Image (tube, rainbow, N blue to C red; front, side, top):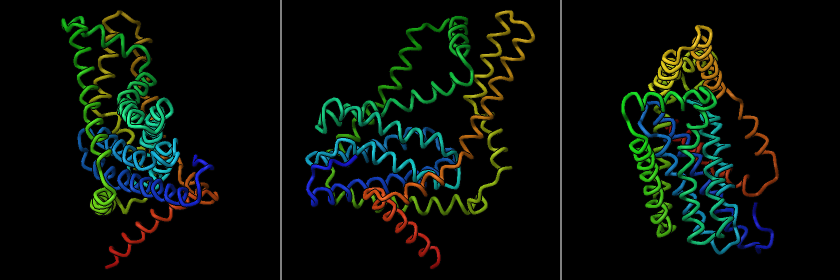
Length: 318
């Protein structure tokens, strides 16, 4: 993903920029992400999404003159791989989100080049994934009945489609405005200021990782705990709300008992399997394969990441 036409100095500088930003993305996703997950911080996915947009915007602006068209995707893929090291919470879902946001950001650069407008469009595209992913997930679990049930109850409650669309588009607009604000900030962020930001947030990430791991059996994986937490995921308000309106819609529609039974247990079974897989899918092997490949930017990123982890361990030893 690095242009071979770059000279060696440009390549080394580009590699350093990509590696630094990818390692920082991995640190924040593991540290801050674990803290958000532990204390159930609202909108944690959107906050981490905005942080990634800021990182990709800053890296792309630094690489604008170095022919690095695919740097956002490179940084995101490596950051997603590092996320597999997280000892807590889901892995596959956030890894998918990180990778897709990087791909969408890169779409802006592919359309308009690594220019101001290309990066701006990329930031907007990337900000939309946090709305697309849950939509796809709940469609997978509940099927088209989820949309029919929402329409049915909105009509029964006399809620017009205009109000629903207004709420949806307002929510999306707020996210886009936040993403653009961080984009403009990143465009004017100097290397020195970014290094200070990295240092401060990395320190916070380390401390939050230590706090969460110490409260969760040293972060060791447990199949039983994964099963219990997957059942807890089924009790989340949004999932219960979606399940309730789907079953009520089928009941009001005069469906047979067999159809009601299917409409109730199908989402539960698919939801449990999905939540369980999102927790236990083995991605550590992927990281080992990446480490063993002779790719300069990946090795540089992992070296920075492992040095940071080593520093954290030495601080713990003190």
